[in-house]
Length: 607
Image (cartoon, rainbow, N blue to C red):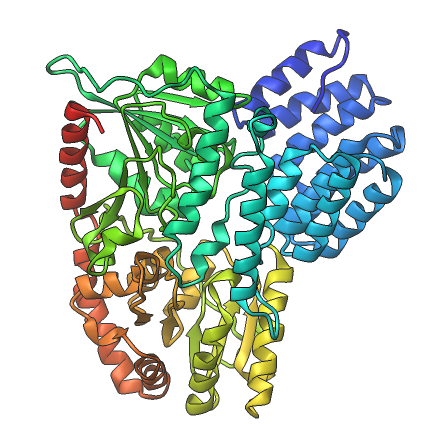
């Protein structure tokens, strides 16, 4: 977005930028539309309107405005790239790729074009195209630190096709990380301020391996580089709170809206912490603004959003002077990841919004739950592990509006067994494909219901891999495998209510999907994994006292799924037990009171 010289439309333009920074995108679009009325031949005005419309969820209108901006100014680079982003957000991968290729062909010597293309390619699951585009960046601009960083992280695929071995890509990432660490010597450290955290090795977590050592190497690199670029931010002294003053808790997150991190953790924790003892200050690093954002704003002693650049967020935290900073996740939001690599408070804590050690030397504690951790779990974390009671959070039913399911319109046989497979594509690792094959072989006409990802190329890769595995075993993949369009929450719940079981993913479990299934009285088949991230659904079931749905071997997992698909009496009895016992999961204040005690204790004595 850009502003132009003062004219009669300047006030609308100023208001538009202000609304945009506040996440009020519809209001921003209305203001920018008035600017366009005055500046019909301004590519910049059309580009600003297009950006606001895109953020407001009006994709088709946004694309039309970007196209008009390009017609007015064929050299308007940002319009090509932003339009590609909108196409990708709409799930139109082919159109996004066409726009990216058009931009790369029109501006072949512009490293920024190739870098943005690399970002979008990677977000769409096109790893090879991403790495090729980033290589073009480095050929044009060898000192482009962000391209080097992203290319290292892009060694990790988001989903695996037929014949691909995750171990190969893990080794490639390890080598790239060592090379990145060596490249960022003292002379290049100042280049790193915006590169660090731009992308996180998020997809390591989906390999069922102990990632502590590798993520610690990554965390040390992040902390070293940001300490060099921000040397004034030395560790503050231990907290010295005056008697009776509440603990000042800064919650730094990009997910203060209707999203899984908010739903699972922050919504319940922050609503029920004792405000006379814990003072909550939200720093919201993104701009999505919905009803849940309003709830967060109402909960907080202060609410900061819309800041530009890392230095502005550092300054906001310095002004706040928190006793404790809580990052509900590290790995899913770039600004949070950068801030977390600095020492900005006496005590810094991460929670399991991304259920894996951060590896950062600047994070003191990892908030987890008794139900999710195996024996000896501390060895998996660089941080000191804190286990809150039960499932570790205060979780409310979602209670969406009820709708029915038109199975025929989805291409699903309403008379055959239906097992929901709700995981994102990167949760389905190749070594576990045989479980789904064996379930389909033994349950015969069972239908496995997946959902197409926001990046359709990822689902296509999983579909291709599974279809080949099914065909190689003589199964009818077209009969057994169904990839359904993304659903609204009410339609997703309707599907859960009308299926026979949910198959939890192996190695990296699904907490929110398990809780949603249980709210619908749907049995969940869970595998108890080696690490916390593989024990979310199994932990939920064990808290309910439904250990019979927790598998600890491949044979048990397949047996449970087949029995629920084929044995109607067992399925009805199991569903009834879920309905009777699920109340223990909801609205439990014990984890909140334990979190309160933890915050009071660490604030009193420092890290």
